[in-house]
Length: 136
Image (cartoon, rainbow, N blue to C red; front, side, top):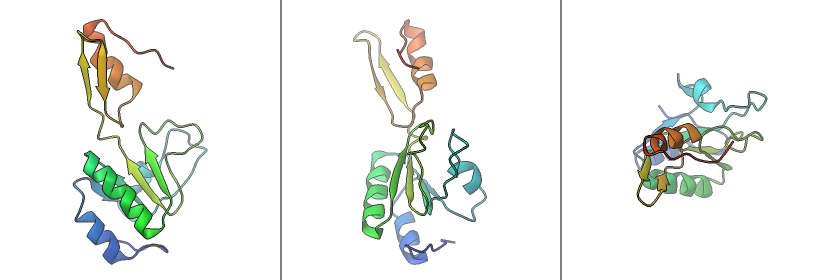
């Protein structure tokens, strides 16, 4: 059941949910507490909903929904931003963690990396080809 916040209605959330392939996590859901937290535990924000994107269409839908509803929008990749920019209070979080695919072309020494991939995902895909990423 969709939960309404101060800036949304249950109906708008249900309509939005019908347009996306990824799941929506919101206050009251069993997964909400674990899903809303980011790496920096000093940042404690509570978004109105978190869209667990599985493809670019979900990302577009999430951005459009936040704009249409007048809600703050945060894009979350690996959840490691020190300042906590991957979350907000009472807005929409577009979570990319399920979009963590990495494809390495060893001949050209390039990689295509999904927005939810971490350095660990990239290194894991690159290592078999004797490649690594500079980063820290």
